[in-house]
Length: 205
Image (cartoon, rainbow, N blue to C red; front, side, top):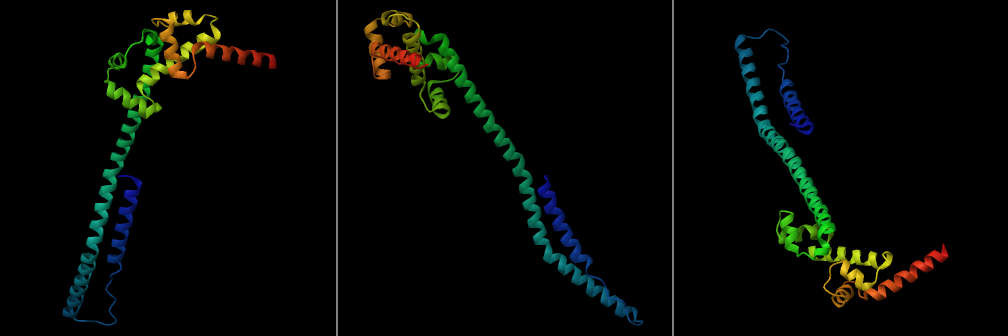
């Protein structure tokens, strides 16, 4: 039982005790007969039972409410822990997926290869990617491969044909179509623009 539950119970019990302890037989001003005293005590006991009976439904309601609080608190903590654990698992799957891409992207493996290696299904991997990075597994693969090509085009001093071969494309024509589909420009156009931008930046520095 948590602090809120204990506080609720203490308040309810204090109120109940206060109402019952407040019932005191007034002192007799003179001597009364035993029969009169017995009748007064009986009347007061009946009054006390009436007050207790009137307060009982409230106490029962409070105890039920406290019981629900006690049950809900562990459940909410368990749900929060499960949610955090699920988030961590999804983030771990994305990290492992990217690590696999570093090793295998140039092999042009399909999505199901990565899903099987990660111990999941294509549908589950797709759901994880959408939830974590708002993308599809295929888009993640293409993004990684295009980034590799862009780095090579700008910093490697290799020709487009050499880069296509290095990234294990069948031929330069297919590589050019693929690159243009992903970026909107051909590898040659990208390389020229990037080298020009770097030269301008160096002159400015």
